[in-house]
Amino acid sequence: MDLDPKRLYILLAVARTGSVLAAADDLHVSPSAVSQQLKKLEQDAGASLVQRTPRGTVLTPAGVIVAEAAEEIERAIGNARDRLEKSDGPSGTVRIGGIPSFLRTLLVPRLAEWRERYPQLLIQVTEGDLNSLTRRLRRRQLDAAVVDLDSASESDRLPAGITEQPLLDEPWKLVVPSPWFVGTDPVDLTRSSWPWLGVDASSGSAAAIARLRKAAMLETTSVHEYYETLTALALVAAGQGIAVEPALALHGMLPDNVSVLDMPGLGTRRIVLRRFETNRSLHSPVDVLVALIQEAVSALDLHAAAG
Image (cartoon, rainbow, N blue to C red; front, side, top):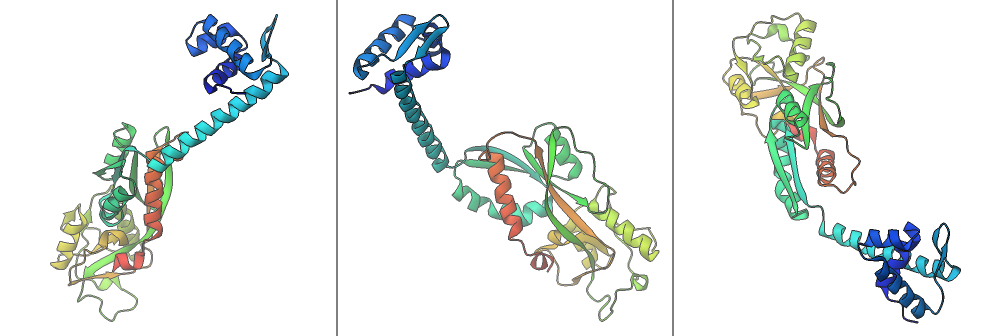
């Protein structure tokens, strides 16, 4: 017995659609072509495979056996196709946005390694802050965005269809000129002769500073205002003030004459990944990148980052 696999698919189409006419339409061939192939298949099998009834065409017991064999072949081919696709690795473009400290410390240093692991995966990076990244994500100019929030502050309302996944909680740190507070335990902010450096109100550190000032009943006026961590560190190093920065932002950035102190009441910064809800396969390019980011976060040493 020699059964032609191509004719097996025709038998499957008849079994699934319930008639020769419907199978022909599904296969984009003529009804006569379907009938001819069925007859040849029956000759090869040495048995009648289909039976015409008032309700349509049904399989005979022999037809059921042959159709089940055809389904096994179909599944085997599908499994082989899936394995081949997975062996090639994920492919496509992922547009990821992120806050500067996260990109600089965790994501950018791993781009070359990730490209080597997944050569067909193209990662496009965009730097921004909470507001700009959320806006670009909402407009679907990004596939995902890593943003930061002060843990004690009320979270902003997520746009429809966007989900949030926690990545990391890290401490806020007090950044001061090195000669200050040497040998002082605990830190007494009221003894400081340096002013606070001002920061944009939308920044997460603004909430931490406000919380600390309120607890210590400190002056709220500031002479200088900054946006970038590098600017804050330059001002602190120049003896122009003190600042609050997250541990991750200080990684590899500290000038020699700047010290980093733990301060009760500062709280933590929450870093989260936002993306659109999806029902796609877990092997989609975005899911692969999210898994890579989680892997990088799990390997992070916050103590080393703050040093």
